[in-house]
Length: 277
Ligand code: F6R
Image (cartoon, rainbow, N blue to C red; front, top):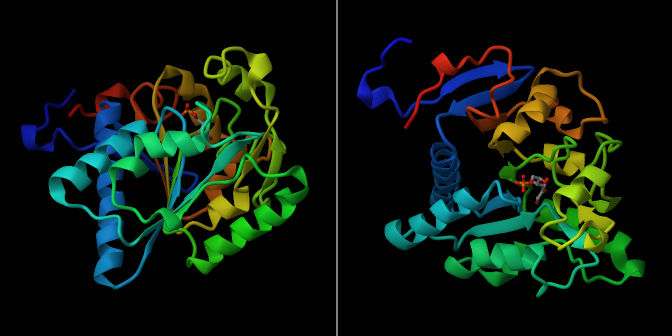
């Protein structure tokens, strides 16, 4: 392996495959800092132009480090969220906002309670909604995203099934915000959080594939060995509704930020090409 000068060792290796930019980092922290900085720059750029910055946000274990870094930037570097409007990807159905597994609670605890975002600028699908009102709610969610000017940057994780948001296998490219049925693997992955698979909700509300693809920039994070097979399929595989994340191949400004383990099954990334920070 070629020894790099020390000042260059924070740089990730970068490549492009099927239209997806791929950046491989020595560890998750380095990837988290990189995305948090890009989000902060997007916010500052919009503020300087007198505009709002519209962010699409994800839950789950993956983005926690990004939120931690954004909170730190708010606290230590006076980064303001005064001009930020957020739309979360999804929420279980049914789900009351105060329940431990609620994405409302997650976002408050990980991010919103620690920054100066205006509460009226936060949008999360309503898991407590009456079933008869779901369709109208979903149409309204799409309208609110459009009225806000569309999403500037969408943050994503990825599920073992290849879901983005809760767009499970079988989702179509033109799908919009809607009620979905969760895949058995996704429910199994959530079983610990709910103390048993039998308590995991069967349904969720999620932004659609098209809703996600309408974002001007998409940044997907994946860390760990267990994500390597689905990352390989998403990047090297054919575009198919069986692996909804493959629709990102057609987007145009999508980057995957991976640690070495998540990237370990990609054809062209050898560990010699990645650099540690
Ligand atoms: C969460 C979401 C999901 C997760 C995915 C990965 O809002 O939309 O698609 O990003 O299930 O979850 P973790 O990060 O827990 O591995």
